Every structure is written in C-alpha cells, then in structure tokens.
Image 1 (cartoon, rainbow, N blue to C red):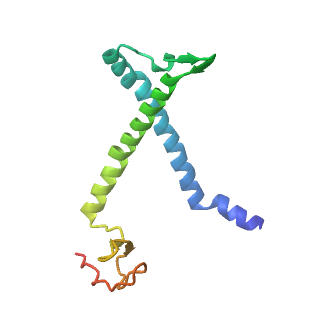
Image 2: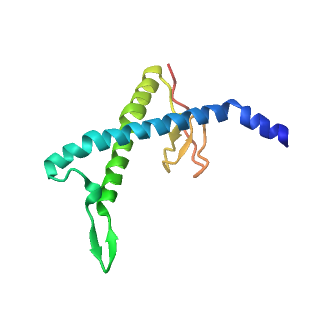
Image 3: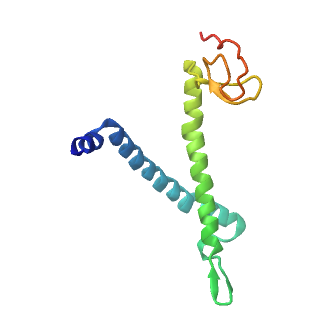
Length: 135
C-alpha cells in the first residue's frame, strides 16, 4: 500500500498537475491584478464609481454588498475570456494546423457522439458510414 502511494506521489501525472495548479494560480493573480488595476478603473471612469466593492444596501440591519458580487462577476468573465482567447483559441488553431481530430463523430441518425472509427452507433444501433479519410 505504501509503495502504491509513493508511486502516486513521485509519478509524472502528479508533478504535471502540481505545475498546472501553480501556473493556474499565477494566472488568477495576474487576471485579478488586471481587473483591479486596469479594468475596474476604466469602468469606474465611465460609470463614475471607481470601486464597486463599496456598493451596498441595507434591509432590516442586513448589509448586502452587491458591489463585491459585481467585482466577482467581472473577475469570472475576465478569467473566462483570458482562458478562451489565450489558451483555447490558440490550441484549436494548433490542432487544425496539425490536422489533429477529436477522435469522435456524430451519429447520422441520433447525433450522439461516437468514436470516429465506429461502424454502428452505440446509442441507437444505426449503421454508420466509414470514417472520413485523413490526409
């Protein structure tokens, strides 16, 4: 049991995951800095409120800090945009340039995803045509 744990800890997958986590945390810090120091002041200059975290309202003694939620939404959208435009789009272009396929196709009858080499759909059992030829 300890040997299996040692193999897991020293395995390459764990190391790659740890590096990915550290890089992800660095990207989050970078994007949060971008939001706090550039995007929020620009929005504040347009709207007239430079710091959304101060926006609150009160009902029966309960304070609702909706400004913090606005900041969180801006951070979420910004991180999503950064991941999409700086990771997903270049990776998809790389795959297209290399001719790398996803390995799946859609069934001609039920449109379920099936393996590219499948000759029959596992969902509706309809026969499928041959896999498209790759260059």
